[in-house]
Length: 215
Ligand SMILES: *Cc1c(COP(=O)(O)O)cnc(C)c1O
Image 1 (cartoon, rainbow, N blue to C red):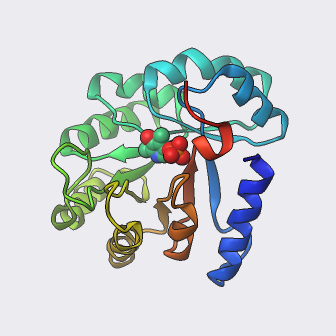
Image 2 (cartoon, helix red, strand yellow):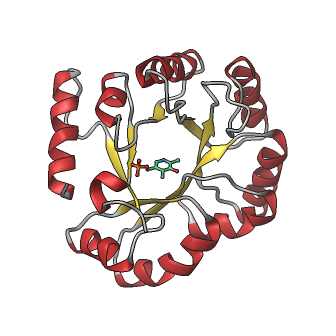
Image 3 (cartoon, helix red, strand yellow):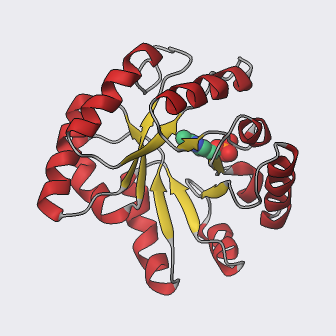
């Protein structure tokens, strides 16, 4: 599917949900995609991209940021504390803040550098043992900790279990964000971004539907 088709589907989903056009931002997830596919999307003028790994992003994006104005890069995958400094230099936002140790490391870097990427707390809405994220019952407390640390937490992110109705998970994430006064909701991928928009997503993270299957 083309970038224009995805954008049109996003506009239609916003419209169906009675939300203003442009209230949902599209993160083009370029992880593990051939360079020429990413370059084609850059050529079309898209500037907001997501990557899963610090190393892969560090290899690919400095050159593309150099050659294209206005690139905005978001980290979507897990962040180890020993990669936090590198992530700080590369990413405009981090969607995977999920534990106190990482929060403290980011707070230290923010203080040292006088700036910090925008932060999303990842919530493990399905309470899956193998999945990253704060448990729903622990999320209010974790948000409070991050605020005590003066971290710029703007929203929440989730990845629903593959075999469950995603709308229930999106609704839960929206509810937790609402009661904590958080505006941004990073939810919805290629298979379910329209469902996420109906539930209030402000960022959708779409990879394979734009770029094709990953290599
Ligand atoms: C890979 C990935 C995506 C994009 O997945 P698609 O199904 O290709 O759209 C979105 N979010 C996260 C966290 C991912 O790891």
